[in-house]
Image 1 (cartoon, rainbow, N blue to C red):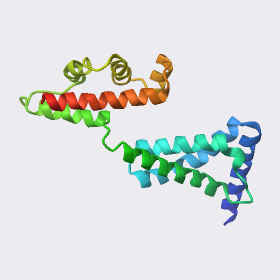
Image 2 (image 1 turned 180 degrees about the vertical axis):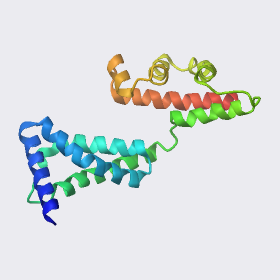
Image 3 (image 1 turned 90 degrees about the vertical axis):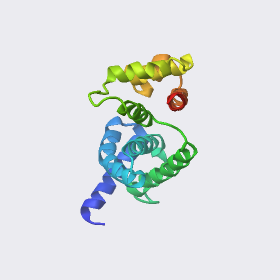
Length: 193
C-alpha cells in the first residue's frame, strides 16, 4: 500500500469507528461519498444494470451503517470489509433475481403497447395521453389495492417508498403489489392482442 492508500484506509477506519460509537451522520456521509462510486462501478460491472447497481450500493451502505460496530481493523482493511458486504449482497440479489426471472417490469410493458400502435398509420404518435387511455381499460381490471399502487407510481410519479408511506403499507407489500399488477397488465394486454 502506498501512503495515499494507507491514509485513505486509516481515515475509513476512523469513520467506521465514529459511526459505530456515536452514529455520526457526518462520518457516514464522508464514507458514503468515498465508497459509493467504487461500489457503483463494481456493481455495474457485475450486473450490467444501473438500477440493480444502485440497489446494491444502497443496501451495502445501509449494512455498513448498521454493522459498523462489527468492523475490526486488525482483521482487514475497511475497503475489504465493505466490499465483502457488497459481495454478499450481490449474491443475495442474484438469488432473488433468479427467483423473479419471470417477473415483469414497467419497461417491459410499454414496448407491447408501442408494438400494437406501430400497426396504425404512419402519422400516429404515441404520447402519454393516448398511452394512458389505452392502458386505463387494463388497469381498471386490477384489484383495487394493485390499481391504487400503479396509479400512484406510474400516473402520479411517486416512488415505491413514497407510496408505502402515503398508504401506511410496508414497502415489501407495495413492491409485491406492483410486481403482481404489472404481471397482470402484461397478461391482459397480450391476451387482448
